[in-house]
Length: 358
Length: 252
Image 1 (cartoon, rainbow over the protein chains, first blue to last red):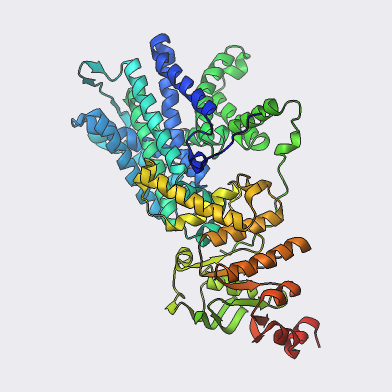
Image 2 (tube, one colour; image 1 turned 90 degrees about the horizontal axis):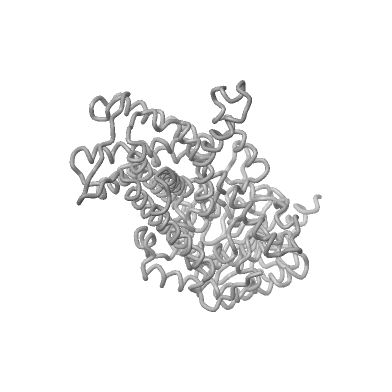
């Protein structure tokens, strides 16, 4: 077993727990930087998409995993980001600026929606965000030549200094940098007062108030940040798929995002990456398995949503902490071998909580 | 000097008058206890002071300032901290970050400096961390610093909650049944801590309590309530020997 001896208070809020962990991530980073130069085109594209899902997942994880609010409409923020980015490009705004503006616009929409919707909690908030997503979808559909209407439009390719944006390697590097920056910003936020305030609201709103945390302010902030990050993922996604129309971002996208955070593991940054791997790999696995299945199953429509749904339910029942939770258990099993006890993670009977005052 | 004045405060839930025209004044540095049979409205009084409930009638004045309309989250900033009867901690966090959440009400960093974790934020984190360590030392929580709340026994949770309230650096501390769920040894430790908090940190305390020993050991004055109304106020001996109080507890 590895014991970390702390000798300075700085160690309590470092981004990495110890040197070994930091070095592992450095190795991973080197592998990711080298990857586009050795892998085939197809895999580079798949990895870029994985990074985009990671960014979108970061946005939703902040809201669901760290602030404890549920949104069923995050596809709308992806759509807002994607359309804003592409439309800005059409009017001649260069790509690096347009993606930031897209994130800000999406975040601003999140702020406005947040102010209105965050009076609600739980299922009511989920339904309100669902309605918002539906409105955005219809709005884009009715946008005429500005948004391309229901038929959509092709995303123009860009060239700066002889480098094409849709070149797989270039796009891969843009996605990787965006993801690293997003994760770094989230990590920083979580180890500073604002992040702790979010977590406090998730765990007990009553206590958070008694600790002087303004619920409305922090919930709205979390919603806006979450919308902004997801919008940025949408902006990148537009270039990944190359063609935008309103049905690109539907309720199924929202559910996929929610699944990403739940299956990955609520309230963990590793969970984002695990979850994104899961939702971007699963369709490939289903496609592979489809060939082996008898024809009366494999040709059925809705096989993919069915598999997605069953896995989500299985996770909720058997491993509510998600893939990351399972990973923690496996790691402990090997580090304590042969002393591991199954009951370590047994959920304790919870003590009676103070009667809710509201 | 008077720190907190409750001037005939009332609140009713539907037809039930939970608190009916209760008045009291708490002096600076005093330990003021509230006792009474179940359903007397003791916790409701605490909820009124910490602004979880709106007062129907009457006024609350803290340090000469009317706090009857203040928002719930601003109460902490004014210098009033509280604990809850069955603990209300941030379950999926460590003891340390529970304390840090309380410390951060004095933060002076904005969202952007925190996102980039500028040196200013780092210095602030260090100062919070040092102050958290002082409280950990005071209440002997060294062994639990990095443990998750969800894995702690109830007694330690109670102490952690007391530590978290102290981390707000309050002028007035509201304790809701601090000894409930504690064994006799833990209760004895608690009575010493309460005295330390009062004498050494100079914090005024309002405490709702059932344990008569603890109550008479530490309190300066006791307010006895029954069915939402005040029966009597006085020293622990005066209050417990008052005929109305004996009647309320034992019947006619």
